[in-house]
Length: 337
Ligand SMILES: Nc1nc2c(ncn2[C@@H]2O[C@H](COP(=O)(O)OP(=O)(O)OP(=O)(O)O)[C@@H](O)[C@H]2O)c(=O)[nH]1
Picture (spheres, rainbow, N blue to C red):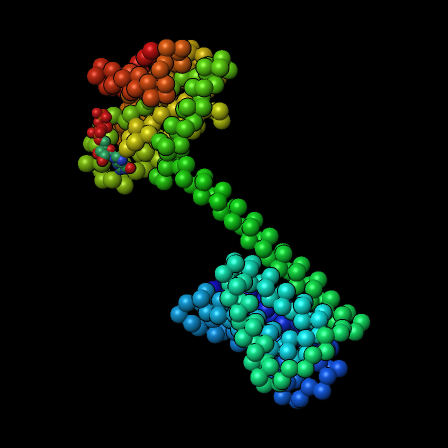
């Protein structure tokens, strides 16, 4: 439908201004009143008729393709009616071809040529073939509004679409990196970021630590209060993490109630202090309100070290440290190596 409306605006302008160019040429010929009526209808009624026709069809998009082919077919007819007057004939056919290739690519352009030929044949059958290809100054001038206005408007419309597509592609990319429930980065994106951080650390750029956090007895919250409360706890925990971390830290939801954080550009002591603050804050919330519904958190922290094989090895070690926290009674932090 949007395509139909866009073409409607372009067609109203193109045929409206194109009328001037064909009419100026026809004025110098002994055109019949019927031909003038046809020209008026083509210039000022057809754009709205075509739009309604397409909007009411089962597939407006396909119907608009058909209308574009009718456009160029009619243009072929006017070429014969203008007796092949070189300038207006070239301009109207070129504008239609540009429109078709911009709307439907090479395929629509080629079908358009066939339609133009059909229009010329129909014109020849109805009006006969009489050639008068010379263009007067007045006729050439009458083509200028179509030439300039239409190309400008079509160019602007194409630019707007390209801009919109670029924006949408950026939005899709951003969405594909996020976890739908918490808005944090998802595991896939996190893994690609972790690779980069590991490379940076190896190049001696800066220190970083990998922190893995798992909510304790989370299943119990789901089982007792329902999944919606469970979801709220996950969201609240995510906000708590965001509030405790800095811009340069990377937070992601790794799986169900498991979260990973890259604490960037901080030494081991700094990362330990930060993790302790998170574990203690979660513990303190147990008695304050229902933000986390009494959940605590088990943490495994592994600072970057040269002996790490790769990013998977780093995650594996953080996971191992986190399970040590679980096995030691949960609600605590383990520093791994
Ligand atoms: N509400 C909600 N629950 C989830 C989501 N993803 C995973 N879960 C639940 O999280 C629970 C995880 O259970 P477990 O792996 O046994 O972990 P736990 O109960 O926290 O136990 P420990 O980790 O051993 O302390 C399961 O009941 C999952 O169904 C989610 O997006 N929303």
